[in-house]
Amino acid sequence: MGPLNIIFQKSSGKALVRATSPDTRKLMPRLVAEFGEVEVRSIAQTTFGQMPFDEVRAMTEVTDLASTYCSACGRGSIDRPASELVVIREESTGSPDGNWSFFCPEHSLAGSGRDGGGSSRYVVGTRNDVLCQNCFTLLPAGSVCGTCGETAELP
Image (cartoon, rainbow, N blue to C red; front, top):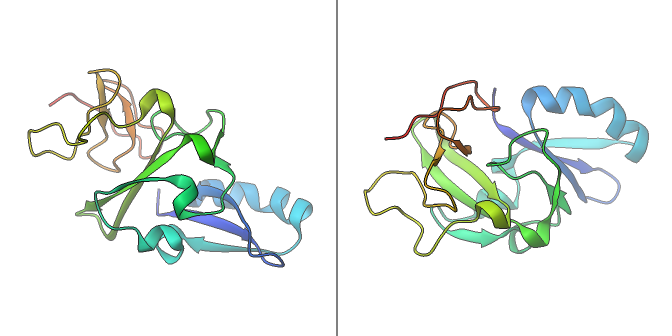
């Protein structure tokens, strides 16, 4: 799928949307028509790239992006206001920049974060939610990841 991108309005510098590479190509005509000239940057080249690894942050502390979808709810779900979301940057063997996951209140990280087993899976509201081991999107165990197409399995 490629990296996550943040699309900015060029005239104001305001973050408009986060999108996967294929979604970026689909969104561009609408965003250009609505906002004029836009700029696409890899998420690692934005303020998200300055986040320390494995630290949960309120999204409003990291960016002026007004809203986005929850990684657990998946692409195509409703966008949630930034004030309701938390974001975490995790290390990844597939990318030196790591991966970012966004969580709504229903899927926010519980208590101390790590599940105690030393894995990269995080404890969430339901014990059947797991992180996709390919792209670290949170989703129900046994479902197909909307980001990379892999099936999420319980450990």
